[in-house]
Image 1 (tube, helix red, strand yellow):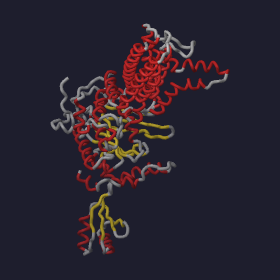
Image 2 (cartoon, helix red, strand yellow; image 1 turned 90 degrees about the horizontal axis):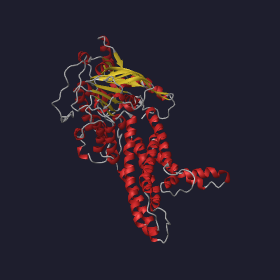
Image 3 (cartoon, one colour; image 1 turned 135 degrees about the vertical axis):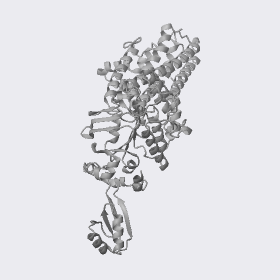
Image 4 (cartoon, helix red, strand yellow; image 1 turned 180 degrees about the vertical axis):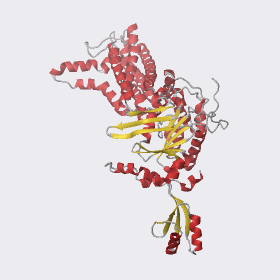
Length: 327
Length: 289
């Protein structure tokens, strides 16, 4: 369990993390979501005692990180890709970590096997691809077989097979009763993996809710209709007391799960329908709405490049919208 | 200690979450160890020997010390020059002076390169006691640097004594042997240790190496260009306390007759290194990684 209490980090004038309080519980995957520059990595570094908080407190199973004598068996972390010396082999990199925590050397082989790097164990990590680097980072996190795992953007740079592997790995780890805390800037990714959701923007807590609640609250369901007999359908819908949200040229939208009602109504009135499809507003949109304020504030801050505009976050790798409903 | 079961999540399908507590918890079969400095030392030893740059810098060091040592020995032995009772050990100085740049480089790299690669975050996550990490690095590096220097310097000294018997060199006394091998090796290793502390403060390999080479050579070079009479005293002090001159004191052939003598250079460098480490430890605790 990770507990944050009023955690704050200031770099000069800039507040990177602002009074964050939440708890990461065991047995589930907690997604840590926020746009780029929201303070996710800073928060994770403070959990690991790498950055000193300006104010507030963070505890791991009730202890400060620097009170853990063999931290790798408590908490394993993947912080950033390639946080190691490129001239060292994967085996030696993991070996020196294992030694520092008194973990048996046999464990190095096991984690290399788990992440599928056994074949390149003796190769220098310099030549590793981004995906191989992520796997080595995850091997380091698993080394101490810890109760808590923390992954910072684990799917970055992974191919679809790798992404699939990470998702299943996280689910397996959480299923074993471990605490899994994973950050991402992709709502779509979180929707597929996380059970609980912590959203931050501008270093402030925006939401701390279960994934199911977030979906229920934030995804509007509606029915999308296209018809060449627009006026007749509008009259019929109006007559039946169904409210229509006219969403431009060809398309009509009706709030709620009313596709059956609309279809039957159209049939009764002999209206031709070209499309009648139940829809849900994307979670990505909900996420963007939630963080819009903080992102906007950022953009007005006079910073040249600014954060990634929301549009760019809107491109998930897969048409995920259908996927999450199954899960 | 029982053999740990393969605790990988995927390789161990027979594992189940421990039964109910308020939250499900996971118990690892890996034995919990209370880690000490010994663990950190083992880790740093693995680190220092598993990168090629260590082998390179130490290899070049040995090559310089022994190569230049044998070369100067051969030149002097084949010339008609008479050492007139000087100790043969003093010829080892030139190789060690150049070689010290390698030790400085290795010392800086031991700490600073971790900041360049990002390894430091992994290291500090594995061992949250920052002081312990720096202590372990210092001990491992010092022992490596001292042993390698001692072996090279002793080999060169033995060779010189054998080569220069016919040139009127005096047989070195016990103290001369001690100073020309152990003494100068301690000095070089300490110089490397100072570099390690500087690397930890600067956190940038190239910057820290530049500073240390400046410390090594600048006082002598600056002193060379101090022609003004009014700066005579400053010039004298720069000469006497420059690292090359202090190194030469171990061979009793100082550039000047005043200034530090005997084992003084070692105590001076020890004081400077201790101060640098005090600063390095304080900054390490204070700064973010």
